[in-house]
Image (cartoon, rainbow, N blue to C red; front, side, top):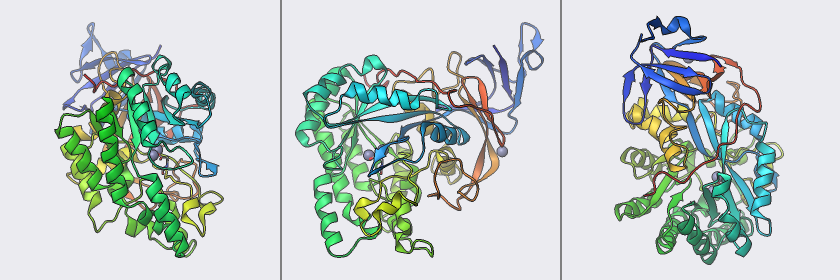
Length: 478
Ligand code: URP
Ligand code: ZN
Ligand code: ZN
Ligand code: ZN
């Protein structure tokens, strides 16, 4: 058993901040104390094993990234970060828990897919991890199997209204799965884009010779996201199911979520850093000496990056501030340019969809505080506390309080972080979607269940430090 005292810092939670010392015993937080407190008459600093000086810094609950795809088989290849490399990059960036997606396809047993993902992740993760279940083939077998997920600690599943022939569910399948969600309390997560209509538009663009990555963003028009978001909300309402819309990028989809929430529905929404910072024009439309107009492939993901001229990015910041959207996850699904994104040279439809950001989420979202979009407390809420509450981890994770797992980040607001592959990021990618970003703030120390795994510039963790965490039902449901 080791004891650690984090002293001199400002402890920030979703509801406030205070100057306090945090005492950790083994894997848990045991006390949050007045600075300089004594315990049983003795000075704490001299009686603990390790003292971490957090003077001038923020002490926050470790980040929770509730949307990642390590090793995901997708687009004719597999996401380039393994559980080992992706969770290590997460740790470097101040994220101490991830919730990754188990993939079940049509004809596969849900139980087998879950067992396979345990096999993939077990013994390899740097930080704690949970699973959501992708249901890529809704049928009687998978619907029955979904009823056993909660016992396995998996309290949410994802459906796709996009990607026909891959993970797509039609409205009948969506409704049936949502009825199981209503019965069991499992959270329905939805990829809300009208896949069949997008495929028609994409085919027509390619037939016109419009094959560059830019046209990925044109085919996946915001109307396709707004429409599917609306349809998902209505189907969930009919089923009586809670609904969490993933990777929201269109301001019109936000409006659908806001209207549903104002109408009292159990509807929630997540956006990702890429939809706050990057755009159709600047990234999907980029060209470079190395890649020509194929440069934009670096930012091909779905939902796509939206037009800056239409103001989606500013609207996402606003929605995070006003709670029209509740969370920020990364949708971390990296592919290298070489041999992976390259599969779609000459046809944007064949570019594997996804971006890598897991290492940068805490820093990128802190810029919302710097720019005055978010309070410090809201930053913690969006990146840690709400993810914990939304997906049944709160109490153990997402908060600094006695009894919670000692997942803690010491964040230096006066530090600086250079982002990119040139700055030697730790994600397994041959490029960075964030190359050249220079941001205020720095992740100094990362503690995972009481163990210091990132200490300044040094990594002290090991594969297998991270354990599977069984999740309960969402704490947002009454
Ligand atoms: O482009 C994306 N988002 N790739 C990952 C799979 C998904 O739809 O979330
Ligand atoms: Zn998706
Ligand atoms: Zn995703
Ligand atoms: Zn620093």
